[in-house]
Image (cartoon, rainbow, N blue to C red; front, side, top):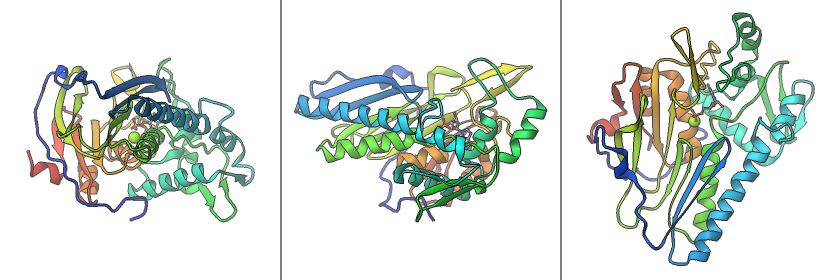
Length: 334
Ligand code: AMP
Ligand code: MG
């Protein structure tokens, strides 16, 4: 199974604590905990680090933020000068040189496309760019029909030996919005670990990577209610793991009674509508990020089936009617 880590068994235990107030999840102000947040990558980054040495903790937090700024500068499609934007502009005409890092992440993204049967597909952007969720703009049927043939991960040709990328046809665009934040928090965790920090939480919007435990107790991560930000529907005690949530409430607008949101079904070019949120728990945030988006598109039945077939991965899904669904490892525990 490519793209997946093969590490030890998950140790997390699941507690189903329905509708706990969010206030229970606040940060206790302990002397050796250091906390920063910053707006980056189109979301809020939160970093919480435990270390007796305040200078080391602060340097670690600064290094993580610098890494995230670097990743954003190379991989954002909101910047015309990013490496990815330059590739999108030219790769349909000719093979374009690509850095090992970006090529490696796109290779993993393609592996997740194969794993999810194309539900996760970074070329969704071939129609995805036609939406503007802030301004309430969506493509009409003609524009969708024109853009849709560009959506297919098999249009992307990576040549690892030559270090190039090429698109097989015009109109193909890649966007890494469904995987880059997970990658960034995973990189952040590696930086903290190598600087001697063993207990930390790094979040980028819906993607969270935990290092170690919360000093003797598991980290408690809440899955928010998709229609009420003041409530959570489940609480997960996690140690040394990642959790990513994809929700139809993050970026959306409503028109004619339809919710248009940012997770696009590559088959139709329209917002996926089978579920309201998907949380994936696993050992690697790049994986949980991509899978939360992919399982969202797959929907409950196919999504749970996929998660149950993978080692060390669990899912909490809120379906279209607001019901909670769990993968088999969590079903046994609550
Ligand atoms: P997430 O919140 O991790 O589910 O990421 C949502 C983001 O993923 C969107 O804002 C898009 O940038 C991107 N995206 C949307 N649909 C897909 C898809 N089918 N496959 C891969 N990425 C997607
Ligand atoms: Mg994701």
